[in-house]
Image (cartoon, rainbow, N blue to C red; front, side):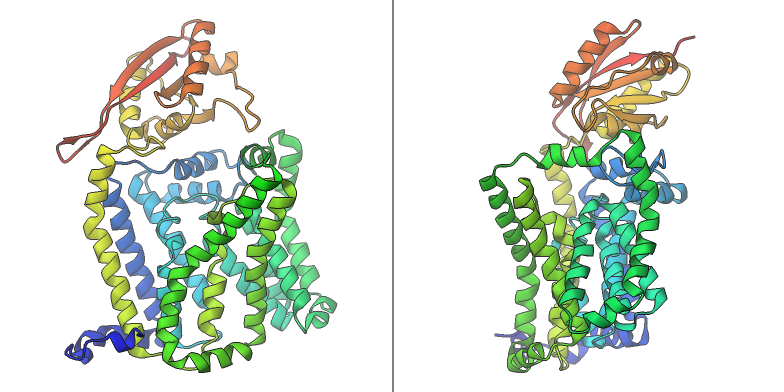
Length: 514
């Protein structure tokens, strides 16, 4: 049974389908996609705000903000781009939860818009609408995107880089070649995993029948030259800072046995397939009456779409192979920003107009599902009030408020630096002084000891009851630092009159020297 055949005959189709038909018509006139993306951002910001009333920002998002405060060319864990974006965003918007939830959804909407820029080269309004709706049935653009981190920052960059590469390959124009190199470099500054996208471009170009024309032109070499230039300052920073994000990656994901790496690689591939399963099944229902025409279109796939398909396959096949060779682990979440390639090629392979009724029904179903998510968002908030997040997100703001009171009871000056684990990073965001956050250890698990100069200006460490390493280190510092004051307090979240689970917070305060 197809989507269109499932429409009840008694439903006055012309009436309920009228706004959706108008929206699809508006796609060709230029306002349909922007309207859908504005609605997407507005609804999902509202959903996130309500659903996380009992929880603070995700630590990944706070980490991005914390990285951006120094505007360095790198950090001990990630390349600098996510920190730069968070810094620019917080220069315009206030340091609140809703503003960073807005950042996450705007970033996701930009990703959907970038995919549509590629799609409009091959298909019209009905299939552009279908592609956008199928993308919304991936968990990538809502649930994964809500955590603005090194993975989420790649969501718009991968399709933009892909568009520039496609146009560069087709036209060999200097502008598109330079754009492909520059956006590819931005993706690398977002996360080193983007190297697999660059590899995908290379593999696709080598496999294409027009590869000689491309490689004999100046386009690929211009892309390389422009792409290397923005990476040179970061490479210099890596060489001179003594901080190694690669050390962090190896410490976090390396050291796996051959069997363990192989199992991880298989899990990665199964995760990719599982993530794509629902939108692929929906698409199959939509085009089922014209399946023979669709298969015929696949056999005569446009050369540009073939290029994109090879890029997508390479970005999924190469990472698990590298994982096995290096003896490391990998997760399917890292491939999320590239899954659009498969849905893009799948939809653009349609050489016929898809059923308007089917697209209308899918649009209505997508809207209903989003509204239901908004309706049930309070249920999630209540549940998380009773069942705390594993990251301790229920306590960041509460701990910051009490800690700020305790600090100012002992010192008149704002706190300049705070050390600790995840809770301390959360406190640095929610504390009104916004002290700079410093982790208790670096990427190689070398413990950081505050210098006398840091202690003289004023310093503190904050740990939760669920951070045993932080607590152990805090006790050692408290016994070794003259003038250190130890304190402990309990925080308990409240939501609509219902008390959540309490948590114990410990801290050491070293007031500034007079």
